[in-house]
Image (cartoon, rainbow, N blue to C red; front, side, top):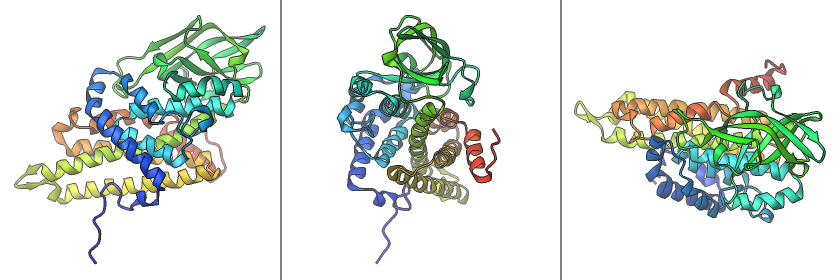
Length: 390
């Protein structure tokens, strides 16, 4: 019996390991990406515009807070389904996946995990519906890789808190209605839900970006911002709170990067088969075939790594070091593939008529945020040696 042709983007048939529900989720988000994101995203990137018109559609598909319980208006999907959502959204653009990641993992998750029941009931249904957008305020101007060196602080003033400080590189910043802000207090680092209209709270757009141009990035400033005690997250103290949020976001990123790699790989395979030089398609040359084969190898390994990580997450046994390994490996893989794909495209590859240069530029941010590659290497190194080299 002749062998069935393999899918170049899924050489190990990882899709066969998914449940029927997981495949349905992937199909739905893939259609959304192909029909609503891909046709406009090159222009959005050129214009430096986040397509806010897609938010309601993403909410309708259940993509915001997808893994949180249905009791709070969310879809109640499993971890692998959330990963597939990130993969398909980032196949469109890292900026779109970043929006969903921040809303879901960095804003809705801490309200669910560290908030009171009143806070969950107040905010999560509105956020799942896309009616309230959130941002996550942890990184500060003086350094992002050392969150313990936090300067933003909050002090008690009667029944309220007075918040002062600044945050930087904040996705969704000036688009958001609320910010999850982490600040030093007399009782350690704590989180606060800060509404945009609070006096003294300003969000300023960061311009001149060459990466994540189809995404909102801002600086946040807090000048004696009064926050009621009812807006403090009561179940998080110390760095464990924000780091727990980052673990959730890094998990999604490890899947999302695969989508960016697949987009670049798929486009360059078709280009190589149609681009004729010296009387034959460049895909007929050993040099290009070796490059394409190596891309397929890297994507396959990343797919298997992400799926295993997802199953560990569903079992409740996933550890932060495992997330670091996946984030490091898969972002490095995607960035290398995007750069190689741009090279195969030649001069045509420098325009956003083709996706690799856009993905390559975006991935320069993705490999940096939520922990740089070096940070994740040191996390894994610490696990391997038992010695902290930070």
